[in-house]
Image (cartoon, rainbow, N blue to C red; front, top):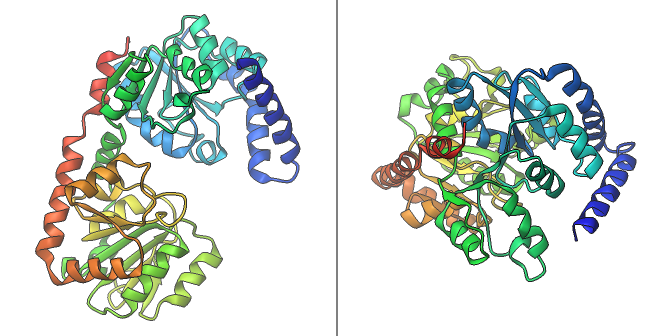
Amino acid sequence: MRLLYTLALHAYAFFAALLSFFNRKARMTRLGQWRTNSILRTRIDPNERYIWFHAASLGEFEQGRPVMEAIRRRCPQYRILLTFFSPSGYEVRKNYDGADVVCYLPFDTPFRVKKFLNLANPCMAIFIKYEFWLNYLHELRRRKIPAYLVSAIFRREQLFFRSYGGWYRRALACFDRLFVQDERSAQLLAEHGITNVSVCGDTRFDRVMDIRSQARILPVLDVFAGNGRFPLLVAGSTWPQDEDLIIPYFNSHPGIKLVIAPHEIHRERLLDIESKLQRPSLRLSETNQQSVADKDCLIVDSFGMLASVYRYGQMAYIGGGFGHGIHNTLEAAVYGIPVFFGPRYGKFKEAKDLIALGGAFALTGEAAFVRLMDDFTAQPALRQEAGAIVGEYVRQNTGVTEKILREIDL
């Protein structure tokens, strides 16, 4: 089966190369991987010891970042090599100063794997959440290079646990330790004889606490929200389906204010949002403390602002729940405000936990959104009670990085 897996990877690499002539993302991946060996030859110092972190994309990078930065602070004798598979991660973080070398990860074929490991020569490998490249894992084990998986979460429907997935499941034995988010994952692995497991939680809790401590003060948001006099809903990473719930309610309820941070901020998306709004609005990039005072809606039209904007909200709507799945709930939850989202949240442990506790709410449609907003705007005590639950949940789940570092052999 591993041979078939390798043949499939060769075929995937071949078709990705063909696609690169027509698709920008595929072209960026191909060119980035092509440059990897050159980057390693010129940037890797053979006299230093490198810990290799691999993140598929930007979300996984943020999840692994607390561990990376803790190692960099406490163990300066090590250097950090960071790899990405997706351009959406690499292009944003290629100049990340928490790593000494940043590059793409080549496809998981035997020749590329050996070439990469020969050049990088890591003393340890740390994969983030979902990365299971079989040839890399087997070669690391053959070379006796310790490998760890951080913030992993397993579900019964994954290939590992199917009747025909034993060949894939055996790759998990290549990890010296799997740091999983919850007891359910550990129990599922134990049912299949995998015991090299520690239940530590999710490093994203540590990351959002770091983000909160570094959040920007935005005076225009203070003025916009009337210094807390108006119930302010922050709608983060929204898609059109989310806005079709939020905007009609906002238009007909002058007692609330709204910040919308769409997941995509190209011109057409911004114009579409503005066309639906019937109350005064302004793009955040165009605001100052004078111009924002008489506006009812702000549209966040630049990336990197949302985590700081959430601090000004009394409620947060997390987008994506009517599509492939919700975006980052914890970025808002860290401020101790209630969160709500669409029905597709099943893959997110924190969303399910918060719903069970009464701090988050899953909405099936417009009627549910209206009921919840009516309750929260008319009864501030309900809103505050749910927010207190959310804040306590985040606080109780921090400290994951410390647990992991105690078990890694540094």
